Amino acid sequence: MAINIGDKIPDSSLRQKTSDGINPVTTNELFSGKKVVLFAVPGAFTPGCSVKHLPGYVKHSESIKDKGVDVIVCMAVNDPHVMEAWGRDQNVGDKVMMLADGSAEFSKELGLDQDLNKAGMGVRSKRFAMIVDDSTVTELLVDEPGQINLSTAENILEKL
Image 1 (cartoon, rainbow, N blue to C red):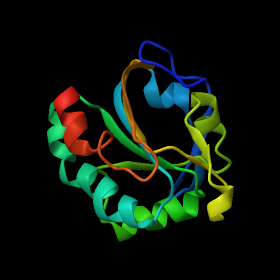
Image 2: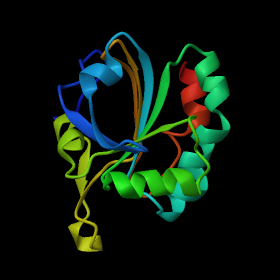
Image 3: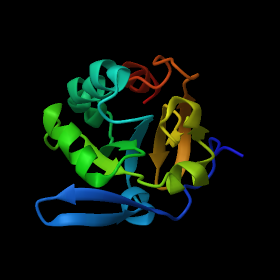
C-alpha cells in the first residue's frame, strides 16, 4: 500500500556520497522539523530524468526554497557513487541533495516501487514528488510509467 497525504514518513535510511565518504542519512534527520521536497526518479543518467526532471529542480531550486522549503532531495535506486556523479554531471551543487536508495528499501516502504526486471533494471522507484512538512506528507504526485508531468518542479511550485 502506497503512502498517502497525511501519513508520516517511515523510519529508514538513505545514503549520500560527500567529500567525507558515503554517509547514511536517516529519514528522521532528513524530515523532522523541516519542509522538504523529495522527488524520485527511476534511475540516474536516464534520458527523461537527465533532460527534464532533475534539471527542472536545479533551475527552480531558488524559487522552491523561497516558498519555505528547507531541502530539495533527489532520490533514485542507484548507489551513492552514481548519485554523486550524476549530480556533478548535472551541475547540481548544493541546490539539490542527491540521495541513494540502493536496494529500493525506502521506495518499498513508501509503496512507491516498481518492478522493471523485464527492462533489465530490477526494482526501481516510481517517478514521484512529495512535499513533506515535519515528517508528514502534505502533497504527493505520482507519475504514470513513462510520464514526467505531475512530479515536475514547475508542478511542485504550484502546490507550495
